[in-house]
Image (tube, rainbow, N blue to C red; front, side, top):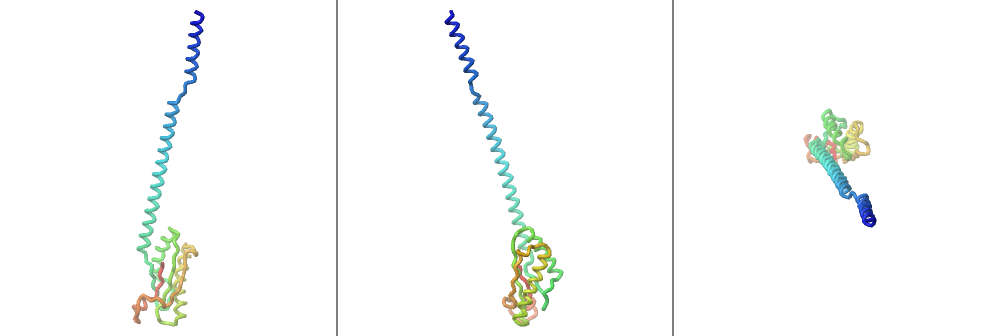
Length: 175
C-alpha cells in the first residue's frame, strides 16, 4: 500500500509540475497577432496620410503651373522709356505671387526697337529689364532668382518700320 501511495503522490506531483510548466503560447500568439495587426493598421494609416499629402502637393503644383501659364510674360514699354506702367506693375504682382510660392528662377530679356544706335538700344533694353527685376526684388523675389539680359534691337519680334512694329519690339520677356 505504501508503494501505491508513493506512486499516487509521484503522479500528482508530476501533474502539478507539468501544469505549472505549461506555456501560454496561445495567449502570446494572440498578443503577437494583435500587435502585428495594430502595426499593419498604423502603417496603412501612415501610407494613406502620405499618399494624401503627396496628392495635395501635386494638386498645388499643377494649379501653380496652370496659373503661371495664364500670366502675362511680355511687358511692353513706351518709346525711349524704362518706367513701369500701372498695368505692368499689376501683371508683375501676379507673377511675383506665383514666384513666391515656388523656387523657380526667372530670366528677364530686355529688347528695344531699331531706332537709336546699337549701344543706346542695348543700354535701354538693359534698363527695362532692370526696372522689372528691381520691382520684383522690392516685392519679395530673392535677387539670386532674377537674371537680366539685354538684347537691344538684335531680336525683334516684328520686322518693319511702322509704329506698331516698333511698339511690339519695345519689351521685356519673362522666361
